[in-house]
Image 1 (cartoon, rainbow, N blue to C red):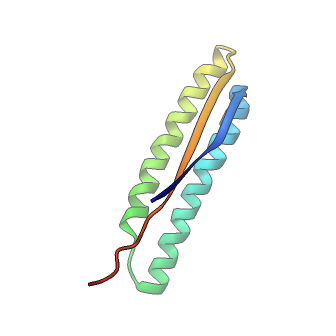
Image 2 (cartoon, one colour):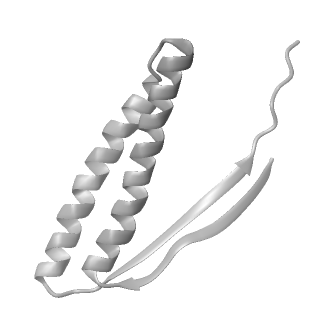
Length: 96
């Protein structure tokens, strides 16, 4: 297994900047899963349960981000964001 760790977001931002950055990421992930659901339905005739569940989780995360950053904005505070991604290359098992 090969693994790479990369910084996705790293820095100090105003609450408004942080909201723009984070909601853009979340909204794009929701769009990705919606398109996957549509594609699976068109091509295979079924919904992708994993994507449906992930959209629900992402929407909850989105609302929480809005709440946290609204409190920060009201207090006039900047926020520090550290977001790291880990990419692992998984070896596929061959059929026996």
